[in-house]
Image (tube, rainbow, N blue to C red):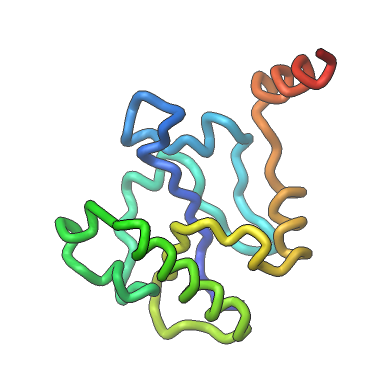
Length: 134
């Protein structure tokens, strides 16, 4: 509805040694789109510069000021995002950053659509199956 692209940016993951590698494609099959929304979820993310202004407003600071985000800021952002999603309105910002856990705060059908659209890579799925069999 907003015309935005969904960018899944898991760089800096604690599960990988290389901080510039997006962890999403390491664990999941490539996804081009979800419910008609274009998705960027591979290392192509390294070549993007997302346009401002940003929502939540904290992300409009110079990047050097964004290196450290205290927990209080993360919780504040989570609450701002929750309010935006619950209002069912859009933000005037060109880029909406969702970098906080919103579990149980989003539309359940939308969450199901996302989870139906992503599939673990075969090697990850085989490990899941082995654990399940055990």
